[in-house]
Length: 156
Image (cartoon, rainbow, N blue to C red; front, side, top):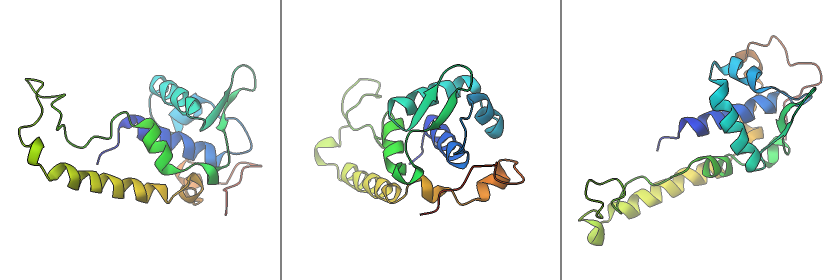
């Protein structure tokens, strides 16, 4: 299973916001922290807003913040929301040259095995919240010498 860049960036945005809880954060700040495109982040943040994971405030003093506490943001839910297609194999022929389903489809066991694998993958992600991903090491890795004044890592 490989997650899209969109999901990767979505998780990075949430981690960054989870580290900076006392203030709103700009897309530019997140882009610079992770050395990624601001233009791409705009799309990611918009999608996270649609899913109720972040809130955005426009104008002076605006920015991004978590829409709810980190302990209430499930990693599996974020991945499901940000991934457009979780299909592991194309049994239906959507990507085949002739548009026809795979000839093995009527008797194929592989689809069920891969479905079980995907279910197990998502079940593991479902056991974690954003709070579980915030260990405190992010502060150093984001180039901060200490946690910004007023910010705190959520501890259950």
